[in-house]
Amino acid sequence: VRGPLVMTVLFCLQVLFFGFGWLFFMRQLFKDYEVRQYVVQVVFSVTFAFSCTMFELIIFEILGALSSTSRYFHWKLNLYVILLVLIFVVPFYIGYFVVSNIRLLQRQRLLFACVVWFTFMYFFWKLGDPFPILSPKHGILSIEQLISRVGVIGVTLMALLSGFGAVNCPYTYMSYFLRNVTDSDILALERRLLQTMDMIVSKKKRIAMTRRQMYQRGEDQNKQAGIWGMIKSVTSSTSGSENLSLIQQEVVALEELSRQLFLETVDLQATKERIEYSKTFQGKYFNFLGYFFSIYCVWKIFMATINIVFDRVGKTDPVTRGIEITVNYLGIQFDFFYAISSSKSSNVIVLVLAQIMGMYFVSSVLLMRMSMPLEYRTIVTEVLGELQFNFYHRWFDVIFLVSALSSILFLYLAHKQAPEKHMTL
Image 1 (cartoon, rainbow, N blue to C red):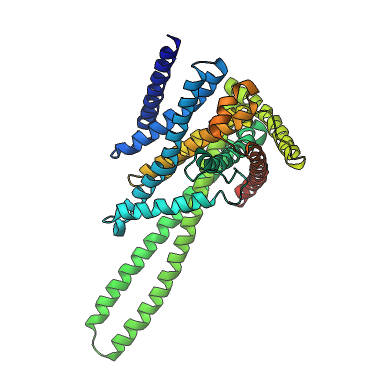
Image 2 (image 1 turned 90 degrees about the vertical axis):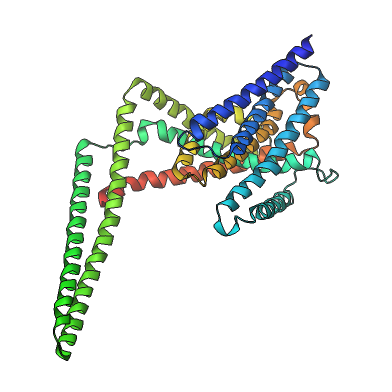
């Protein structure tokens, strides 16, 4: 009875994961857009469902649910489906929707979508050449060949997100990094912005009046006969056009200044809101978390350096330790979605998110395997095949270290230049 019951639970959870992915797609990603391509919604929900199922199977391995044969079957089925989606389905539809947005290629979009997919497959396959990721004895369509390449991309994405998140999280939450902003600073900047806008309006009025005068002068001089009237018309119009060109250049410069002042005003308003938020109980709580994550960041950079220098593999899963940081920045990716999405690009962006999500979860399984006890990782190791698991952990440490140090440098320069920019404006 236990076997059928667990099978039913597994199926119901997959349906639940699919439904949650469907609702998240409708309520978050596409809440401001009319959904026209249901295939995108289905692909996203399927990717989310099978990604969650992989973690569910890890829990089943630890709990000993189902028989070993059933768990092995579900692992194989789940991996083949997720690899089919990530390597064949999602890239093809990304190419299809990209081609559909190009007017010249719309009539032959299916053909050009296939060309895009074959191009992806070429580079995807060549990706495995410079990395020692598996034994050469495996077949072309073996699960080892596919998952090894997906693992390289996914682990790279995970390390980049974790490195940036480990640095940016304390920078975002800690009040120490907030610059002092007062109401007088904001009012002074707003006053400068209004003055600049008034100057732009005034100069545009001058441009309009100059053009009107030139037009009226031209009409009056056209009524005059003789060569002297033509010469006078040419010389006066040349002088007026030069003056008009100079005013237009001044307007362009003032408009650029107004944009900079507006962005700086918005930044000061956001900083002031963060200062006020930091004084609340929740703000103090996140400020404490910022110190905690600062310690974590320093420790993780130190351990990644030790692992690289001494060629050792950490026994603790970096995904488990960094999951709180990474989850916080999924929201940023979705805000990014709203910033650049449109009726034409939204389908492509969602498919790219589905691709990243699927590769992220597959790579998480590769890294989590090391932290699992030996008695629980037998089937996982058997299913994944003869992969170079140590390589993925070392690769994670290298990319994490590069990402973290680059993020520290970038945020340091941004934090240092912010007051200087404010003083310049």
